[in-house]
Amino acid sequence: MDTLSINSATYYLPESEADVITLVNQAKAQNKTICLRGSAHSFPLINTLEAEAATNKNLYILLAKMNTVHIDKDNALVTVDGGCHLGLDPFDPANISTLENSLLYQLDQAGLAVPDLGGITHQTVAGFLSTGSSGGSTQFSFDDALMSISLVNCGVNGAEKVTFNRPVPDNPDDPFYGIGVATIGLFGVIVSATFKCVPRFNIVGTETTTTEAACPIDLFGNGSGDKPSLQTFLEQTQYVRLMWWPQRNVSKMVVWQAKQQAPTPDFKIIPYQEVPWVAGSPIPLTMAADLVFSAIGTWPNWLLDAMGDTPKYREIKEMVDLAFYPAILPLICKFFVQDGENQPFQDVWYNGIPMDNQMSDRLMPVWFTELWIPIGKTHEVMTTLLNFYSEGPQNTGAFSCEIYATKSSPFWMSPSYQTNVIRIDVFWFANNSGDPVEFYKPFWALLQQYNFRPHWAKYLPGGDSPQGVAYLKSVYPRWNDWMALREQMDPGQVFVSDYWRGHLGIAPVQ
Ligand SMILES: Cc1cc2nc3c(=O)[nH]c(=O)nc-3n(C[C@H](O)[C@H](O)[C@H](O)COP(=O)(O)OP(=O)(O)OC[C@H]3O[C@@H](n4cnc5c(N)ncnc54)[C@H](O)[C@@H]3O)c2cc1C
Image (cartoon, rainbow, N blue to C red; front, side, top):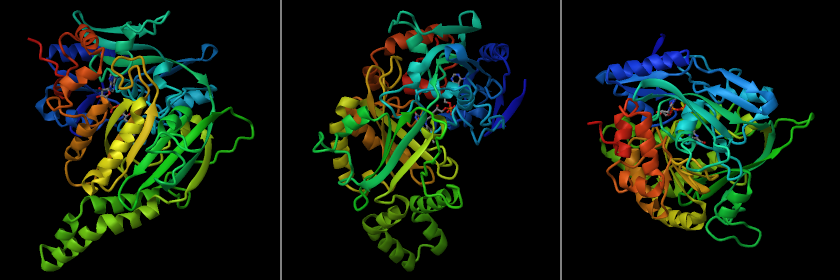
């Protein structure tokens, strides 16, 4: 079987379910832990697992060669291998991903679509499903489209393929709802999944940038005049994403919203521009933003390197420190977050909904912690955050916070289990010096009162922290059922990495 070295980890590249079964049995026989990689968008999960490569305790698997798509047009069903990317992954280390072999493109060619997508589509089907990822809509849901899932698990008799179908008639206690979404690699290798599709569609939308006060949404209230409350806006808009720049003297809200439209022969694409395009490309401005935010995030290290610890250096540092948040950052933001922007756009579904695809995650790398909170708490959450941000730059940082919403999910470990949620996605620019966990801790403590459930693929509070294992158990009513299923699917813990053992409190096999 082919292998590929990525960040010092040697990944096996299975080509068939039989290969996967061989690898799972091999891991069991060698007492190794299986670590799965999709497009490695989960940070710090994937890099933590890859950093363990030298210990030789893990067996790494990449399903890049398992990317087949079977479309049953008559029944609007698609069965897709777990390693298939949703869209093009521009950084696929196996160099296999193309637009043409992606799931979404092939669906579109067949006149079909899935009803919702996340902000980017580089991910693999298995990575997206297994982390409970989803898009910014309370009206449409990726989870709702899942009809069936097949995994290679490692039960008492070793590796075997098992399939779970959506129950008919529906039954919320069926194991399908424990296994279909958010199994974070712990139940086995997802080899394929089947989705019910909808007819392909276009989206039309706008992005507006205003000050918080001028925002067409009553961001911190219950709705007033013709301004809906944020909760109402999130519930009544088909696709939505807000980007909040909460720093004093910046105080901007960027509101991206869109709705579906049936395709027409004369439809003309007007692409969304996340940053203004130069010579038909977002790259020059993305690079400029990267340079500026890297300079901010590593301040004052580079000045110290250039000048040494001299009186002049200290004088400049003091001057910039004093002026940075009140004056310099607002000036920079005027350039990148342009007040008064009102940008209409329209596109085909698979290019339009993922509005962040054009921002290179290499040129503009961002890390996140993301907290999903029952949508009924929107008003309280927003006022709590506003007060928290008003305490100063130690809370705002120099970057933005993303706000979006997701439809209630029937899957037991989805962070939107049984409730529509507002999602608070706290950004940390990856080129910053410093520790993102220290920045995130106050957010975890602050928002615990709203029973947040964290996104599995982003920074999580430590397992033994106040928002760790005991807390997670308290916010997932089906926790024990799910753990019992995990035990059934993988009694020997072939899939339990130290990362998840710590975060979920799974005791080692005796
Ligand atoms: C720039 C950016 C934008 C994002 N936007 C969104 C968004 O809009 N909405 C959202 O909800 N999330 C979003 N995410 C998070 C992203 O969807 C998750 O990190 C997702 O897991 C990525 O899929 P992947 O293929 O990269 O999986 P990876 O990150 O490679 O893997 C994640 C985990 O998935 C599991 N896994 C992977 N393959 C398999 C398999 N074959 N079988 C079983 N388990 C497997 C493993 O546990 C693995 O550790 C974003 C992340 C980034 C970096």
